[in-house]
Length: 369
Image (cartoon, rainbow, N blue to C red; front, top):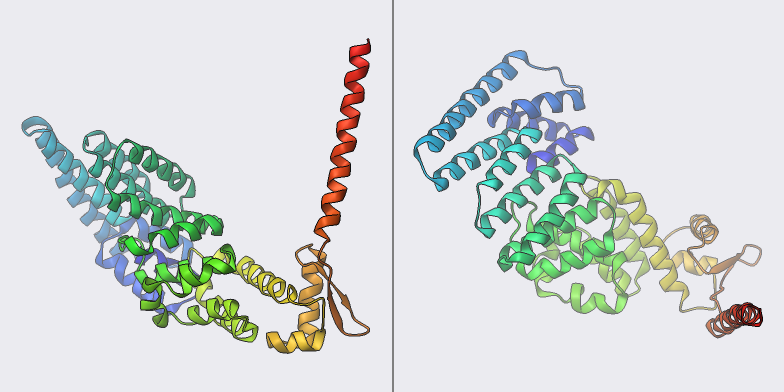
């Protein structure tokens, strides 16, 4: 998974990541992935290096194939399974996606115990996440859940929550991802997938826009597992505390600072623009709930932006229907236009009553006929 992140960073022009990626590919003899990376990043293929890596992969694979044949002829089911597993692990190691899938499935057929079966599904999930094969990831998450219904230990059940959370993060279902991430904090063991600090970063950032403000203090701000490491994660503490304590200037500064961090992450990068907008809408909505009207100048000072920038932001979100307010540009006033809930309920009751009367009239005509 570290190599997957290096590949993403290199695609964004990170020279240090590209250098480390080359070294990792060479060290692990990842010939299949090397050709894919060269095509993706526009690298010139080193023919001699590729040939040596391919030869090394072929020699090791030949030994494992011979071992499978030997086990099928002379050994028992356990040895046959172990031989197939070794082949699958090699194909995963060198980045041969389709053949790794096939080898995992071949091993799965030879596996009876529920724990090892779940481990194989998690392995296939890692391959899918590595290559961003989201269709396979979705299918394997559903498969793992079905297996867990038949039986499975808590450790694997909790690891699956992290796998599913990263999948949901990748497809921008931040609300469900946040719930799974926070539910997994106390039992986190999926270090093969993501580091603990990165996991906490995902949990904190998604909770900001997915969780009601009243739940943030007990579940995020005061959570001991988060407090233990949040100081090591730049800007994360300022982000949640700024929103919860209504320090909007602090929140906006933390948002500006954390967006480049999220943009450098391969799971979060496609959603940074969305995240920025949702966090802004959340902050503006929370602020305006306290006022019937407020001066544009005062609100801009509270958020640490210029009146012109705030005016443009508010106008955009009002036009999108995301904010219930209006801007009096002449007097420099932002007025809340929250709907009257009692009046809305009254209108809805009248509408439902009209529909009911229409249906009764239609029914009476049918009965009369």
